[in-house]
Image (cartoon, rainbow, N blue to C red):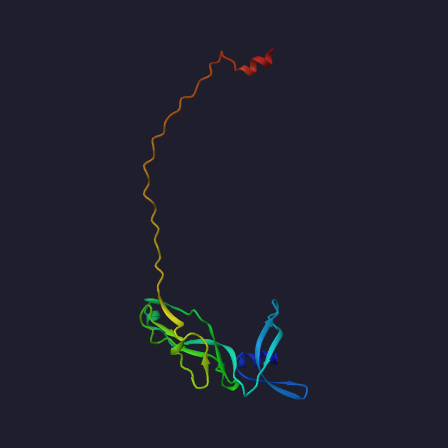
Length: 178
């Protein structure tokens, strides 16, 4: 439970001190595996880092603001990326990368990696600067499927049925009587 409290606050990008015996190490929480039934963590990887060397980490993308296009119902928000790899000294790693969508007012308006506001002297986003982080897509049009026009039914042809006359007995019955 103490770990869950720390993990909720630090996530995988905030530096924490891990005490092992009498020594304390600066670490990042790297991988948390949860029990499938209880949801409790049962395995945790800690990444020991040097405060003098840059490290890489996956940092979540956080959408803020409200898009006028979405608000007016002319488009939908598409977020193709939920996290980006960054490089920085451990103490400079951002908790999340903030993407403001309040200027996205038309379909096809977008925000790219190069437009993310971050201290570029301390943090390097390792993705392609032209990669789309958020975009306004067109609304899906509902197709109304109308029933196909009824085809004219072909006239039913009558097939003559042979009548069996009472005095004629079928062959099977004649052989049974003999």
